[in-house]
Structures are given as structure tokens and as C-alpha cells.
View 1: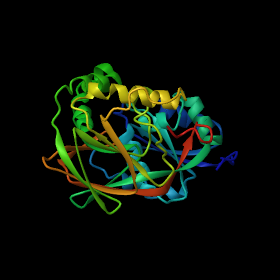
View 2: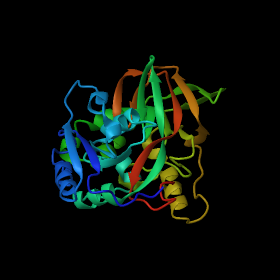
View 3: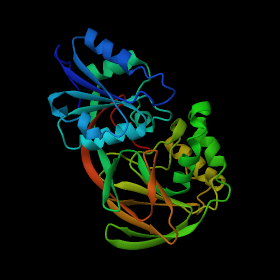
View 4: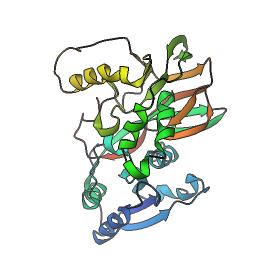
Length: 312
């Protein structure tokens, strides 16, 4: 679906987290550019302990919502807007901004304002995570195990090292805990041993590296990745194969058993030992078990990508 040239009084709601990234959020510059272009813009600053739904109580009165912050901010806004007739722009204002990266969003406030005015939109699936009867939305991925531990350890490094904090934290996962995961995949029981399980909706991780091949955010399915390796370094051959696949460089070079992938529209995951959880970079205070289901085409994201450019 292609966006049209907006009327001069197009209404835009800006939701922003002033503490995201290094605090150099440029979204208010973008808001001023939109006002200069004739839009009616309202900005709302997020405050601690205020539910995101409070800021979006009248969201359907706006044509576009701009969510500026990290992936947690963007996905919580997307989940609150699910199946509403409102377009959403993921403004990259956090440290990693993986949702914005997957949507191929620029970083310049003028270019982002141009996308609000004339950008193409695409319907994207969301995930709904249930833990102890509490529900959360995610757009990028949810996971248990090594990836959640990595994200937790990266928090203290992010102020100094930015996105490199995730790489440094991954290198610390030399001897992560291993367990047997017991899953129910679209109604069918399945078990696998590993250091983690990732339920992915988008396919690109930090620096645009593919998590694995054949991930689509608009196919009504998750790509589930079981990390069977003993540590993160053993996953490097799989990363190389994913990059080669993305670049159409031929058959896999390695094809080892360090990861297992399969598709699911609904999955529940338990572990023989409690494993930490994360969803879109937010580390959950609780542990496994959890369940996740796809919400097909739940949100209209504005994208900088060309048609067909969101798959890995």
C-alpha cells in the first residue's frame, strides 16, 4: 500500500522517550519540520510508570503516530495500535533501533519527516507474548536464554559503547547455561536442547546482520530459532551462511547443527530450568514458561524499504 501526498492539516501524534539512546533525540526537530509542512502536530513525552495506552487514548484521531525511542517503546506503541486505522513510524532514537533498521528507516530528521508526509506503508505482523497471564506485544523478537542474558549484560555497557555493547556482551557468553526446551508448536509437542530459543518476526539483528534466512514480517508466521550451540562463538558459521544466502552467493558453506529453525504461528515454550526472557530488548522480570502467537497484519508501519525489501 503506497502513501499519498498528505493534506495540509494532516494530524500527527509524536510519542517520545527523552531517555532513549544517549539523550540526543532529534524527534522534536522532525516535529517542527512537519509543522512547517502544514501538519498539525502534538508531542507527548513518556513518563515513568504511566501506561502507554494513556498516551494513545485518542490515537485514532490522528493519521500518523510517530514512536521515538528504543525497540521497547516502538513495539509497545505498535501493540497498543494493533488493528487500528493509524499509520506508525518507528523513529530511531534508541541504542540499537532494530525495528527501524529492519524497516530501513533513515536517521536524518528531515528524511523521516518526508516519510511521514509521503512514505509507503506496509502491514506487518506483531507478536503477542503471554507470561503468567500477562500480555505484551513485540515486533522484532522474543526469546529465552542466551539472548536475554546478553541483553541484560549489555545495559551497563550501552552508555559508553552504544550498539557495540551487544557485541561485547555476546562475547561474554562463553559458557552459557544449557537446557532442554519443551515446546508446543501449532498444537504439536516438540523438544530441543540448547542455550536459547528466539521467536523472530523480523530477520535482521545489529548492524543489519541476518538472524537467519527466510524471515518475513508479513507472512503470518514466526521463524523460531533454537540455539543448539554450546556458546555464541559456535554460531558464527551459521551467521556466515545467512549472509551468503542474503547476498545470493550460493549454497551454505557450513550447514552444521548449531541452530535449528522452523515456522510457527503459535508456540509455547518451557525449560527444565527457569530461563530469563526478553522481548524487543526488554528483559522480563520473570522466566520461562511463556507463549507467543502471531497477530497477522496487525499494524501499518511506514517504511523506507522498497516492496519486497523486508525479508531476509
